[in-house]
Amino acid sequence: GAVVSQHPSWVICKSGTSVKIECRSLDFQATTMFWYRQFPKQSLMLMATSNEGSKATYEQGVEKDKFLINHASLTLSTLTVTSAHPEDSSFYICSAREDPLRSAAGAQYFGPGTRLLVL
Amino acid sequence: GEDVEQSLFLSVREGDSSVINCTYTDSSSTYLYWYKQEPGAGLQLLTYIFSNMDMKQDQRLTVLLNKKDKHLSLRIADTQTGDSAIYFCAEGFGNEKLTFGTGTRLTIIP
Image 1 (tube, rainbow over the protein chains, first blue to last red):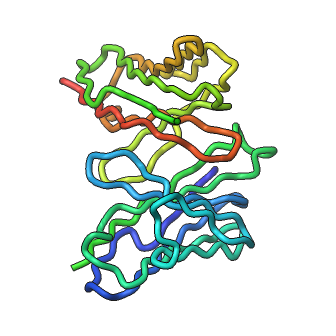
Image 2 (image 1 turned 120 degrees about the vertical axis):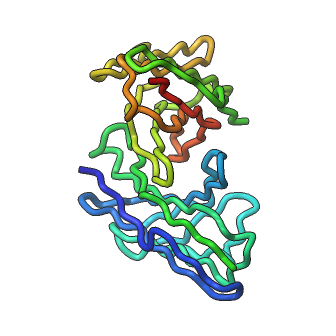
């Protein structure tokens, strides 16, 4: 149980284009989803928290107009990197948190990640 | 503020026990977690411990929590080559956020 998928697993795009990454909880309903960014050999940096049906909460320093997050259903959240530039190249990982009343310790379950390369 | 520290590297011989340590500064966390990340993959939840507990054992994994010293450890018994990965500890708070440690890269020596 508690499987989270991401699509695509990797993407290469030209500078200036937009890229959409999907995060799905496959066997549970995720009231909250998180988006992280990870640079090589570094830890995860939380970008934003999204709750189903409401606006995402962005961490300090993360541009909300550049990283658009939509959490339209209890099983799907999307991150769109708008007008991507080479400095946006990174490993993007989502996680999903089940209702803490139903899951163990309100743990976050992570997707396999999406590697974005902007040329 | 929240600050979680780990040693960057650990090398262990196959069959020995691995002990990965983690220190943190914010004692208001409700749960503490251990995640495993294999190359090019996302994070896999290994185990967690409620902040009021001292120890939790789950098969080859033993988690020890010293709340007074703000120290968390993960012991992996009979370490195998498949245990090679980066291990992250993380603090969980009531606001749902996780604060991750810097990660420890575990290398298994044959």
